[in-house]
Length: 123
Ligand code: 5GP
Image 1 (cartoon, helix red, strand yellow):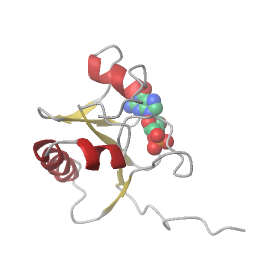
Image 2 (cartoon, helix red, strand yellow):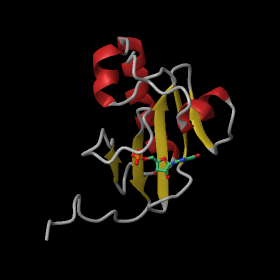
Image 3 (cartoon, rainbow, N blue to C red):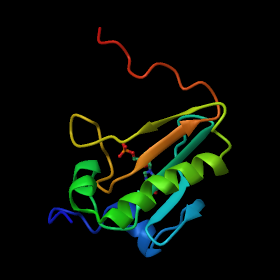
Image 4 (cartoon, rainbow, N blue to C red):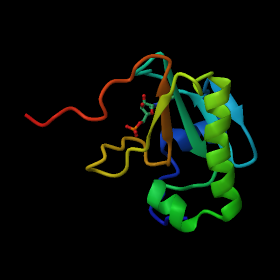
């Protein structure tokens, strides 16, 4: 796990139960909950319970069991949200250029309606 992990980030607080979340799914290694500011009709965040700052940290340092559980959780949540047939988008904002606000790995699951082009064109 990264030595730079901030134990006070908002998702660490959710994992500790210090602040509530609207839970969708949970297993030994993951927690999934609705985003507080949904950007599409369905907007769910999937996070590992381990203290990983981002995808690079997770892919480098998480155990095989944690990694398997994480991707299984994403598939499970897609099913719970009923997005398999209509489709969805996964986003993992990472670092400064990736515009990551919360420094605990999270994958956004967006769907329930057309989510639009991947990126806006630069002017
Ligand atoms: P990022 O920009 O880091 O990829 O995304 C962070 C996401 O966390 C944002 O979509 C934001 O709305 C969400 N978020 C921030 N604080 C909270 C919170 O306290 N509860 C929940 N459920 N989502 C949050």
